[in-house]
Image (spheres, rainbow, N blue to C red):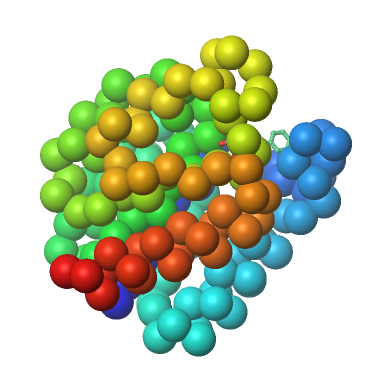
Amino acid sequence: MKVLFLNGPNLNLLGTRQPEIYGHTTLADIERRVRERAHTLNVELEFRQTNGEGQLVDWLHEARGQFQAVVLNAAAYTHTSVALRDAISALGLPVIEIHLSNIHAREEFRHHSLIAAVCRGQICGFGANSYILGLEAAVSLNALA
Ligand code: CA2
């Protein structure tokens, strides 16, 4: 099984700024942990980050036929992007929405996810473990398929 991890804007800053919100773990640390777990589950993965909305849309389009699931931390685009929602709708692959923080316990504008309704499910609030849980959700969906 191949799983594509996509990370949106500013997640490249993880571990370097605002540690009181996002902790000291960097995105590279998270990728390392996800790769370790993926290895035990016999899953191949790609792990990418971009600050561009259009790049996320392009990567979603390209995922078809190459991956069995996408685990997506769309970061701020979660709350704003109709383009991402449309790309997920059109994809025909399960997309699992993840967040480090509990978006429902934060500012009001983060409570609403424009992509939640077109994703298979949402995992949020578990810090770096949200990524591991996202991977496990992708694997469990594949096992059921
Ligand atoms: O909790 C999450 O994973 C979020 O997707 C993170 C986004 C935020 O806009 C979402 O509401 C929830 C922000 C990612 C930016 O991360 C930073 C890390 C360090 C310094 C500044 C931003």
